Length: 234
Image 1 (cartoon, rainbow, N blue to C red):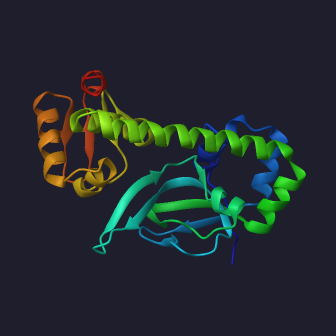
Image 2: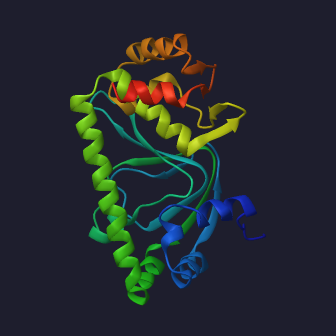
Image 3: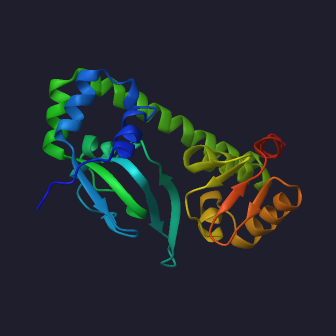
């Protein structure tokens, strides 16, 4: 059986990732030499809450849905890991079990570094420690921003900011429009914002009336980033 390799587009996605691209050529090469390519179908379970951590993962195509289960047993979407992003390092550092479930969202291509190889990379490249520290500082800042928005901004502003982020991460430019390539149900979008599907639906319809977005059956299309920015800024 042939060993999977990255396509040119997938390789470019990894190489141009905002974190990975800032590493030294030697470290980038070392990481890629230890990473196995894994292609998974939509919905495939990558890891589950409580499992031991044994892999560090980069997303080359598709997305990874990170979720948790509520007290009522409902699966709640917390975030999506976008192409070009690496995750899973925190549990490899502290040795504790995974804190959330992770599933492929759409057909997804991953670069997978096993725990022994991850530890070896850390031993051989001090730069990786510093780079991962910067990465986790950025995650912490983003988390604080989300908490602040949740407590200070109305739903319309938070929704507009979320749509701008999705357009940046998954947007496909089509003339003046930007189609968000990530397939999201309104329920998923509502969970990302900590709101009900009904309220999110009302706000989306308001955005559509204002000419900021167009709602399609399985996609959202951004018609005006300027209008979304104005809503996000209140």
